[in-house]
Image (tube, rainbow, N blue to C red; front, side):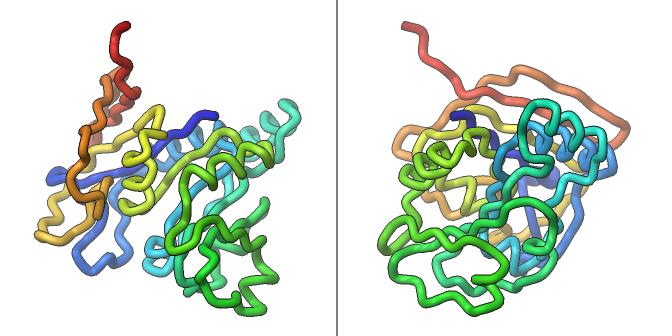
Length: 221
């Protein structure tokens, strides 16, 4: 099992505006980086708030990458898993791309709409909230062992809180968003009892952006 988080942030550490409106922070270079990470992944994880705010397309738009995955004996496109407690989701672009679609919710969630049921497999994992540890185990049982968390901050925070993230890919973009309540890459996490630590293992830069790659810090024995 390998779990990565990929996020683009403003200079002041925000991943979106206070109203969670749709905004593109990353450049074309960042989009190419996203494609590389999606090529690696078995499943892309995205939270319901991001789907409601942006309804992003989640397919892998790279013919060569799809062919490479096929040669490796993998599906051409990674699966997409949308995590939601309410099942309040638009059945738009996020669900209409190629590849397997999953909606992960709780036992307490209402019945899905016929449109949502037709668009995705419905998984109930957890009672009051989605049990991330149980979800990871179920994904592994389905052969989906390479997990790429793409958004939003609440989704990533759940993985950080359970010490599941192996690598963090962070794009620093040249914008200031401001806002006391604008989301961050570990949004709504509260105070970590033991703050996760990551080691910087790679840094690249373009004329506008800095690409950082961090790996979870391992204590020396």
